[in-house]
Image (cartoon, rainbow, N blue to C red; front, top):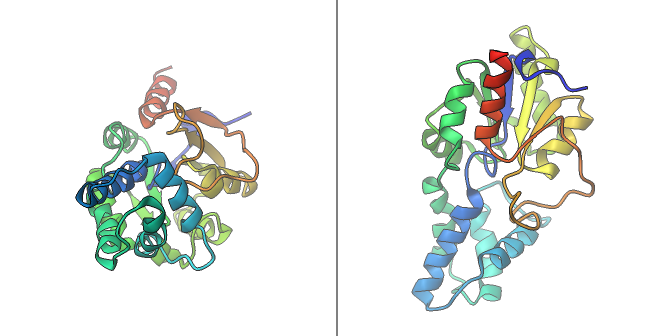
Length: 238
C-alpha cells in the first residue's frame, strides 16, 4: 500500500510536460510559423512528428535539439526548412507557459515539502521555466548537472545522493511526473513512491512524449497539480 502523502519530506518534479506546457508551446510556435508561410498545421500531427524525431539516435540535449527537430519535420508539415525557424522554435521555450494550476499548486506544496526539480532540459532553459513557475524549488537537477537524461537511473542517483547528504533517503521522496516513459516506470523500478499527473487525460495518445513499452500503475494519480495539492491539504487536515 502506498504511503500517506503526509509521510514525505521531498517532492521531486519532472518539469517539462508536468509543470510547463511544452506541447502548447511547440504548437503555438509552429502555428505562428505556419501563419507566416500561409499554410495550416495540425497540432497533434506536429506533436507526433516531433515525438518520432526527438527520440532519434542523433538527438541532442533539450531544448537545443529543437533546431534539428524542426529542420527534420518542417518539410512534412509544409513549413520552410530554414535554420532561423529552427532557432525560433528552440528559443520559444523561453516564453513557454506553466499549466494554469502549476505555480499556485507548487506554492502550496512548498509550504510543507522541499521541492526538487528533475528536468531533461538544459540549465539555461530551466532558469526560464523556474521563473515562470515562481521559483519554487529548493534544489534543481538538469541534464547539464547530471550529464544524462531520464529515464537513465544515473539521473535519479544524483538526487538520491543529494537527499542522503541531508540525512534522508529515497523513501522520503514522492516523485511527481506526467511521463510514463521518462519518470513513472523508472521511479517504480528504483523503488520510489510516485505520483502520475495525467495531463493528457482528456486527449488520446501520448502527444509529444514517447510511449512507454508498458504502462506502470502509479502509487498516486491525479489529472492536475491542483488535485495533488488539494489531496495533500486534505490528508494533513484529517
